[in-house]
Image (cartoon, rainbow, N blue to C red; front, side):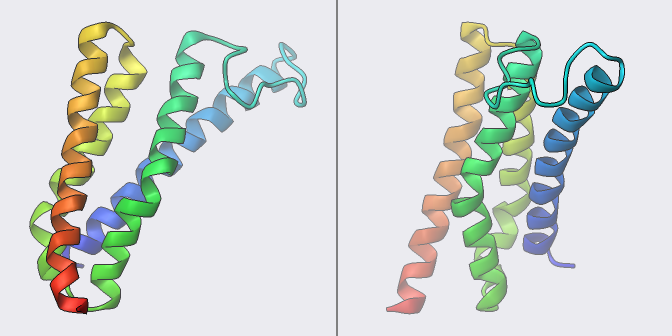
Length: 137
């Protein structure tokens, strides 16, 4: 497996880990009788601050999928993984760190660090776009 495919798989796995965490919280609360299955807020703000942050980390990962996943898939589909391989794993690491910091804290310093990791991801994607454009012109 090349690094681009590995990063795409890791990105999807991270998304599923976050989603599974939400499902697990809902399941435990429902099976313990503390909540009705149909009583959860879609925003995640009705259980705890952590669950709200978990929902946001999950949503942030989903929001990144079009540009991150799209570029990784473009590289794989067009056999241009030489464009994405070098930075694919650093991008995945930046995504995981961004989400992890989001889960830990919403303090001002934590939000600043989170924004830094988001900026790294966006910067890498813009860099990849500049590498793809000449290929398709």
